[in-house]
Length: 478
Image 1 (cartoon, rainbow, N blue to C red):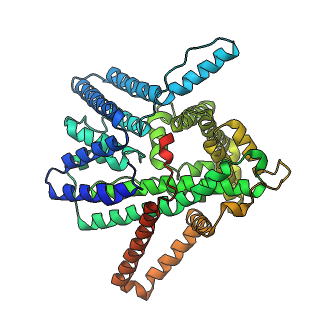
Image 2: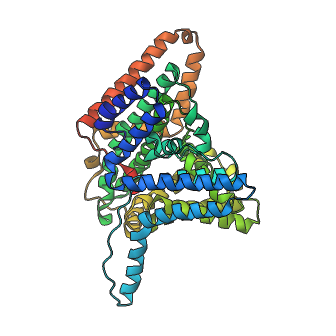
């Protein structure tokens, strides 16, 4: 089950909220609902989820006990990390590793028996990172081990962030798991954020996903310069508003349930360097790699060459985390390379350049990287880049641009660009100036207009979903 479905919006969520606010045992209601939410889409892996929860509950208790006895708890932590990463490696990378081994043996003319393909459990990457952050924070004494197995289970399975994040640290919600406040104001704000996220996902990401997917399915020899750029712009908007929208829906649901989740995106496409881009993109993931990998490796407190190596390792693993494919790895290494180059001196040069050039540099690098992230193979990515940069002599496409666009997709594309780029800042400044005017006293009118607008975009989103419009789910790949 995912948020952007009729089943979730009109059946699961209303029924859950009714039960949640009527019954006094709210954690129990949230836990049961979360388990049903997961089992709805992955019934065959439900046992795996339970085993993961119990194992990490045990590892947390073991680390806490070691601390209370004056020991470091490091052996227990290492064992917990190995178990969690072992499970992630098997389920997410077994097929990838076996395919690589098989190709090596094939080149040596040695036949290997066929191996059974391992299915990827839904949300396993996020579940693993939640578990590891919990164990490490208990080890670092940033939080106490959770002795209530149901509270820990609620944290690990909480359906707002179970499938697609954001990555919430246990220390962030530990107190709220036991004591949280529910107010009409928080529910109201949470509902508004949820509707905005739903609209970002359904009315922008889903709509621009259709031309993006169609263009990426076109043979490279049939791609023109203009069509290729249209494809990567659409995909850049799709992946941004898909992640951003889903994060906002999770944050909104959290607020309605009394939890405060951190912001996950901060206008990444206005960044003027790759360093700034990663200070704005998927913040919960960036901070996870920073705090649990980059800093423990030494961060930037070591010799320059070690700092560069640390960045390379972090982004190699960041790419691998996103998917078991060399194109994902290359995407991560590509970003890591530019971060290293910026730290080595390019960053200082960029500061002296006009903001427009800095912004163009960042967008071009990011979109080139997205080609590898989206492509199914290096050959497809290479062909796409050839078309993007006119290396196929600006040939005329077999399918013209107009065949990928209509009134709806063009409108979504324009709105997406305006919301993702600095035009949003201009609009925000105008709106702030407007609010400072005398009309700001008409608070009730503005609130009514805002709620009417949100109701309108919710209705449009619901109509789109009910009509069976294109609704891809990117997170199945992660």
